[in-house]
Length: 115
Length: 113
Image (cartoon, rainbow over all chains, first blue to last red; front, side):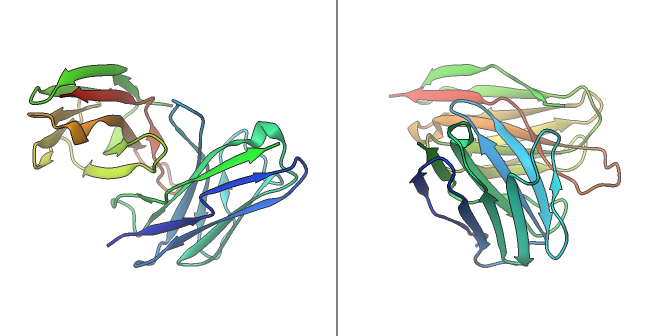
């Protein structure tokens, strides 16, 4: 149980392209989903917290217009990196949680490479 | 504010024990422990919700000292499969906003045969 699917696993694209990453909770309804960014050999840095049907809450320093988050249903959240540039290259991971006091379950991550 | 994990890295032989510590300068509401293998997503190990709580499964256990704002993860009789980077994630005393995890910098654990 508690499976989170993230798609795509990896993507390589040219600078200026917009990239959409999907995060789905397959066997549970997630009231809250989280988006993280991780650089090699570093910790997970929270980008934003997303609740179904409401606007995402972004962490300080994360550009809202650059990283668009949509949480359309209790099982799906999407992150769109708009007009991506090489500095946006990173490992992006989503997680989903049913309720407070419960664990976050992570997707397999998306490795984004911008040329 | 990021919790501090120690040690940063540890190398042990199969069958040996290890302790990983996580400490915070702020009052903690809960502590979560995850293990991440290279190139993969973090995998949930356990969550500690109350001060004084201890939990474990198989040979991995953890404790949460609320007063000291610390948690420790204990790996007993380590197996090769225990290798990976261990992260603690801390939730701070709720401030009215949605509770979220702040992850430590990680402890890289390598178990050798």
